[in-house]
Image (tube, rainbow, N blue to C red; front, top):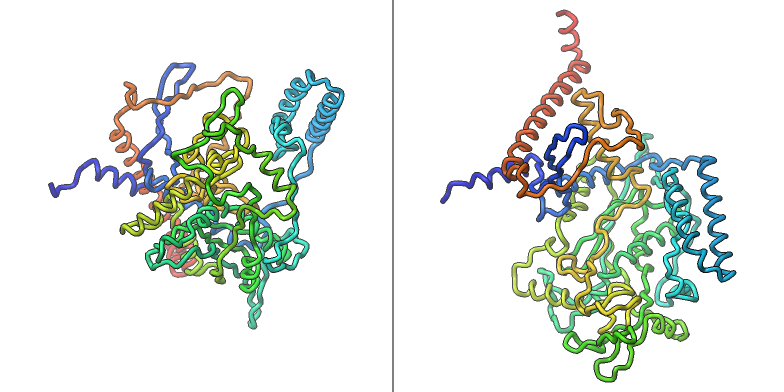
Length: 550
């Protein structure tokens, strides 16, 4: 039994060579000849527990993205090109349709509105096809009926318990300051930053609370759910404070105590005192109905009244407070307080990083250390105390509202927005309620818009271009003949099932892919050795002279 299993060795070698272990199998049919071909595509998973090779590839891509944008000396985003005449005409047509829709509503000609909406949809599709980015206006999705008074406005006055921040006009530049040494050399360092949340109680070195009964799990759950909003507010405040468009790239991950914190690479330098000042002055207020104590329990929940289409108390049959009425009560109360306020903790760590150093490369690895793991798997739970701590936090997250449509509002006597009879309190499908996320429901990798000036697809294309250049390949996908959109398709694609007769066993496909990867790796290593020898020939005068004499 000490002998290794051949299939396990195959999987280990496939992972070593970067072969996807769970490929997506497609069948391509040539519509002219009828010939079919089974093609495996990488699953593209970013989770190490699902497909380690694909997750490792995604991690390297993120590291490349951080590296290329961190120490840039030029602006990554060029100014947009001026709009063409055709694009301007489409925008004008969209304006005419918006005017016609408003005119029809004012004249109570509601039968004309659907046709105008259809025309608006077609024009916006034409605008996107013409090459304009983004939406020219938000869609007309019928949400006007949910809030007849329009968007609710909150006071922008800062809280009295938060320190004030200087506010400067934000310059469009994104690169940092240049420093000149006494010998005249210039360098442009950057930084990396760690932001953490506040304390919820004393914890032991293993991350578990000293006293679980006094540990504030409710505040920990609410802070985790709204941590992303707090980070957005921090970058907004920081840019206004320093007066230039600060760029960042980083990752959100849990600490050992299971509270989220974030590591960021920052282009340019900012005084540590300013970073601490901005972190201390940053907060996010959650203007939701009060949800301090549940009105109902998971064993005794409100019931759905199908005749009235609303949730009612199980005993009195009185309807629960609607979402709109609950917000109206907050708006009408001049002394109303937010349901929750999220703040950073006192631990703000910032360090300077010089480009091209070992420290810079290690920091990139540190920032991306856990991006291939789920939040709950970042730290091992080996003891009963750690498992109990995780369970208590998860049970609190299960009953914490995640948005205005969350079913958990029923526990607090509130009908969520657009309530329906399928809601189940404690079983909301939002990501923040999952045990694997620990309340981090949004994106864990956060990259500012003008970081590297490239998308992930652009970075992949750069990697392919580097390989083609090294191998001496002069043609690529961009050199293919253009396809006329009016021509009928040449191929038909469909998902192939493992039990289909023309689909070989997974082990056969892994063996073929392993062989192909091994050949690719050998060719790449040979090309790199050849390129290194050529570079040595050009730079070594002894080799150059010997070649000349030969």
